[in-house]
Length: 449
Ligand code: SF4
Image (tube, rainbow, N blue to C red):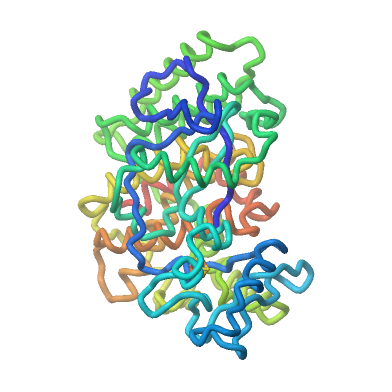
C-alpha cells in the first residue's frame, strides 16, 4: 500500500532549516533514516485503508496467506476467496479479495486485521505494514514521507513521527533494497543530474520557502514556483556546492520580494488553462487505484465519458465518487470565502512532508525531474480547493469548512505518485502546458479565493 523509499540526507549537508529533519544516524548499520519533525501519526483503526486500496500481493505473500488456512476459520470460511486476480486485463496481478461491502476480506467488525490478530503484524502483506509511510532514497539512507489519504495523517493525530524510530527501522529493513546507495539523485531538469548533496540543496531551498511564516501558503507556493521557473531555465554545470547554496538563497530572496499577501493579484485563468485544469483535477477526483474501479472496456468507456464532461465544463459535474453530487461546473468558479481556519497549517504541513520526504520527483514520482515534479505537486493546491468546493457545493454550501479541505486532500493524495494515469504522457504534458502558459500560479490564487 505504499512505495518503498530509500534515501537519506548526507551528514554535513548545509541547511538553513536543519531542524526540520530528524536524522536517526544509528539505524540499520549505517543507513540514515530521516523523519519529518512536523508530522504526527498513529493508526486510529478507522479501517479506511482496508476499504479504499487494492492490496497487490507477491507470490510469497499469496503462499503465506494460503498456508494460514483461512478456509478453516469460521470468520472467513471455505466459500470466500482470499486472493483474486487484480489490475486491468492486459496486466493481471493478484490482490487481496474484498467483500461485497468493499472491505478487505480480512477486516474484522472491530476495525482490526484478522491476519494481524491471529498471526502477528509481520504476517500481513508488506503493503499493509508500510502504509501510510513511504521511504525514498537520498544517496546514503532513506527519507520518510507519509500518505495523506489516511485521515489520521491529515489530522496530524497520534505520536510524533520523529519518536517512532524503532517501528520505522523495522519497516525500512523490509522495504529498502540492498543496492540503495547505487540510486542516482533525480534530475533537476532534463539532462541535469546533480550529485546527492547538490540535489538536497534544491530540496532544502524548497522546504525553506514553504516553511516561511511571513506569508500565506498561497504566496509561499507562488514564491517557490517563481524561483523554480528560474531554475528550469538555468544550467548548473559550474554552479555547485556553496555557490549553489548562495544562488538558491538569492533567488529565494528575490521571490520573497516579488510576492506578498498585500500585492498578490487574483486573475482569472484563461479558458484553455481552466479546461486543462479540470481534466487534471477530474483525475484527482476519480478512484483509479481503488478496488471498486470498474475494469475492462466498460470502465475505460466510463472514464472517457467523464473526461469529455470535464473538458466541456458546462452543465453538471459527473458523479465520479459517492461523496460528489452533480453540481453545476459554473458554481465551482465562484469565490468560496478563502481558506478556512486551519487550512494554512494543514497545507503547509502537506507540502513540507512531501518535499522533505522527496515524494514528488525521481523514483517516488514516475522518475520525473525535480522541476516538473514540483509543478505537479503545486497543482495539487488548486485541485484540492476545486475538490473541496465540489464537496461543499454537494451539501449546498457556498463557503469552505476545514473538513472540506481535509477530505479533498485525502482524495487527491490517494493518487499522487500512485495512480498509473499520473505518470502517462497525457497527464505530464498537461502539467508542462500549464507551466508554459504560466498559469499554475494563477490557478492557485483563483481557486483559493
Ligand atoms: S490484510 Fe489486514 S491490514 Fe491489509 S487490507 Fe486486509 S484487513 Fe487491512
